[in-house]
Length: 255
Image 1 (cartoon, helix red, strand yellow):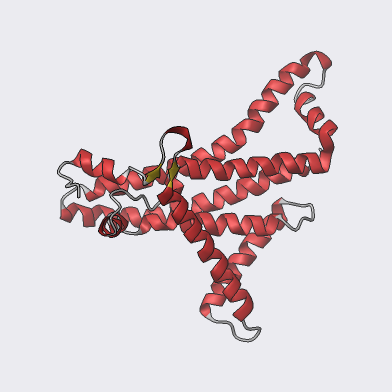
Image 2 (tube, rainbow, N blue to C red):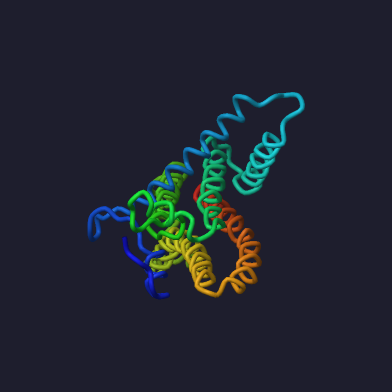
């Protein structure tokens, strides 16, 4: 088993994925495993509350789940004006799923690596939202939905018209419009994925740097940063959800 002797070794160890394969087709098994775990936790918990919940005096946990559901549902109704059975469940899934992925960063930075090293895995990153492959794949899924909803509500003709007639409504400027609108369209998933990745990667890096300090400085810095990071964990899940709903609402609006 490798012995970490320097700060460089410590940082490199914490930022190295458990990877299967090499090059473009390699898979970060740790990120995939954590994503599936959190997805199953979300499905299991909400299904349990839905099937075991009472109509009388609810438990505290049931109240918390219902408040979360109502919070997301009310937000979706304000943003997405068209009736659609997919948007509400999609928004709830994104919010809770991303929140759970982000929240793992609040655990002490060495817990998961120490546990997985006992199991024989030299490297294991437990924060999937700090893996750009995960965040960009989620953003790609949103992008596919944007294109799909645009075709569904506006058709191919409406989609092409939207790309060519804005912001300059003149035939000679249609090529300019097309370039500008394509940049805007493509920038949506890129900014969506990179925003989540950048914020969570930076937060993880700060925790790693704090862990390299003397113990008395770790206590002085880790607790305030962890308290502040709770806000980041929530906000990044909230922003990803809201932007997804906003982009889909823009895709179905006619004007």
